[in-house]
Length: 337
Image 1 (cartoon, rainbow, N blue to C red):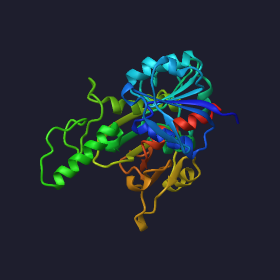
Image 2 (cartoon, one colour; image 1 turned 90 degrees about the vertical axis):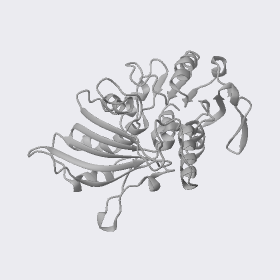
Image 3 (cartoon, helix red, strand yellow; image 1 turned 45 degrees about the vertical axis):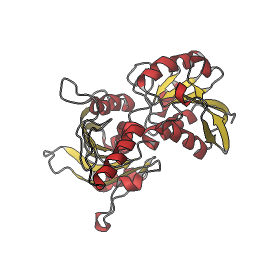
Image 4 (spheres, rainbow, N blue to C red; image 1 turned 135 degrees about the vertical axis):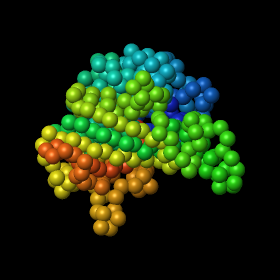
């Protein structure tokens, strides 16, 4: 396997830093690393495989000679720079929202639709939203077994899902409150997050849903190639550091029992079944952080389903920085070497 020249756009941020670690852990064949960031990070040194690598400013010219770009920047920077990289021959795996719903850009979770990776006419492949990935990894094998018709999802998303600013704000608020102080203004959150829940992630749309909630629907349909699948999603920011959790109810075409679902999920890639109520074993974000599997448990029948409706409810957790972003991108890149 020949080595690739790999650039990371946004190499000094939370996801970019995790991408570096994932490349190392998975022994990705990197012949040369090109870490890119904003002008204020130019000249910083980062560690990669025991060597110091200098961060360069992200400019169109910086992509000359690059084979693969892992994008960990925001929408605006992705829209500006990734087409420049693609025009220079690099294949870009982008974690932003900029290209996800474009018809000629594949949106990929490798456990679900790896065949879509090779069809990238614009040299751009999109990484889905973190909550979408974590929810769909266990849902997909159940769909293969019983035919998915509908998903009702409530997410409980960690502070670090808002990047380093979100993580630092939660740490600040927690310390201030522990010391008996007042939080004051909370940024980037609309309200104090410590000791609180915020039932809003993203901006509100005309139908009352937020942009984050609509991602599960729009991205899920595209990834699974299920344009008629119905979704209802509520996204909540919770005061934990890392790993998103989701309560999911799925309605299926065919009957599937909880035991059958456990058997299906036990053999599914990217999934770890943690489901033994007798011993109080179930997924928790504390356990699912800093690794790449989606933990699934609390698998049970939906008691509210009408007679004749086949529905199951389960709870899952996954590290949104790793599998929900960095690892998923590196997995996609592995199909390009």
